[in-house]
Image (cartoon, rainbow, N blue to C red; front, side, top):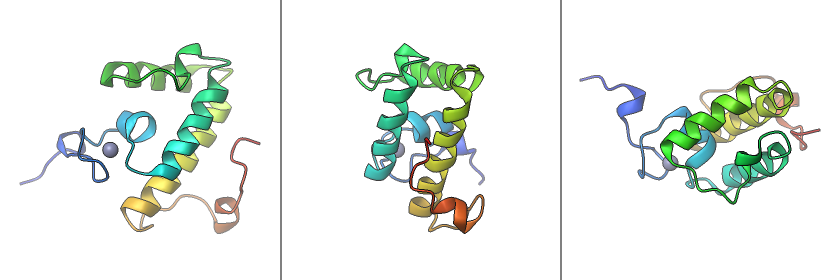
Length: 114
Ligand SMILES: [Zn+2]
């Protein structure tokens, strides 16, 4: 029996379905990802005030903010960098690195927001 990814519990926290918005903006199951997310939300709040980390996000809020971050001309550059870094962390932690994007030299970039 196949299940859609949106029907599967998060492999890190089991607190929600494993959706893009959960992984990127809500999951607390990977401390490194939480730190990268908090930095993204703090910096992104300049362009999108609701991104500020003081806000706990409902599922609907997470979808809305993800759309705002992706479609904002002023936020799209660091949103792309955040998503890239978050997926790197997620794939390495959850799947053991089987899903990789980019080269090793890009992976070693310590400042994703520069
Ligand atoms: Zn989770």
